[in-house]
Length: 329
Image 1 (cartoon, one colour):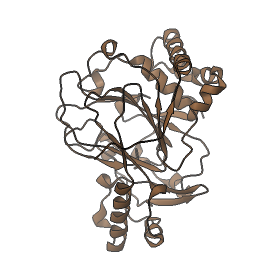
Image 2 (cartoon, one colour):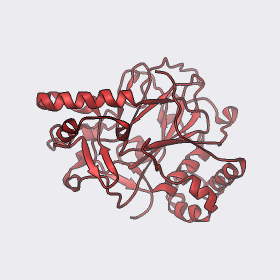
Image 3 (cartoon, rainbow, N blue to C red):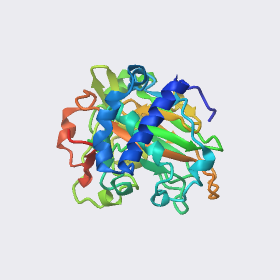
Image 4 (cartoon, rainbow, N blue to C red):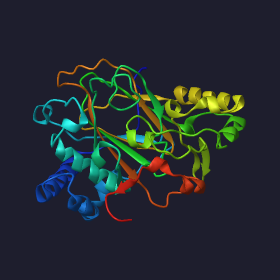
């Protein structure tokens, strides 16, 4: 897939320095990016950022449903080698955890999951031996199928943020907005029916063992601003659906592929994705396992009161998974 342009918001040197200095101050005071006190301090520190910077770090506001924040600088040497698994990262790149938390806190409330990466609010996405062909961020040799992040759960993020630490091989993240598709009205109406469930992905082993019955959910729904989406074909049992619905679902996939962009992130780039509009994935690649592999950090945020989800989602069990918030709602 060719790399295509994506909307870019570029920070100048002063804005980048302000953001990283604020992150360094928070990290020095609290000692760890995982400190609950640091998380609680995020709103206070965000309020102290300049109005100009806060405007540049506003949420996604176009039909593309994404943008790349560019202008931050990652020192490849000081970063150290790419770890072979998220659990061995330790405090490597910890300043960037705090930068990502600040950006996500400006846009909403950072969330984590008790069943993923030990409840961390910033995840490390690296290729891992033995996981090459999975449909998770640890894979490499297969196409990571375009999907809504944590589509199985009613408390999924409204915004997804991916910060690039290293990408020597220019491996592309793919993204496609439902609002750029030309899906027929008949297909859209079919996909607004709750026909098939979305199951937990392989990153949620405990949720996959949940005893509750999976409930069908709609793929598309209307909101005051336009069409929104909940989509994960790799974890949707399509054989449980009727033929017309499956055909409409397939045409949605074709439309998303048609409007897809491929974004090869550079070190320091932060890709911000509206998780209600945009599916994201990743092209296949050959993992190096030599300390120089692609390395992203991932954060998620919810925007309270955002009218992009059907009210029926409140009754879902979420496969027993609880979303953790950075501070009390």
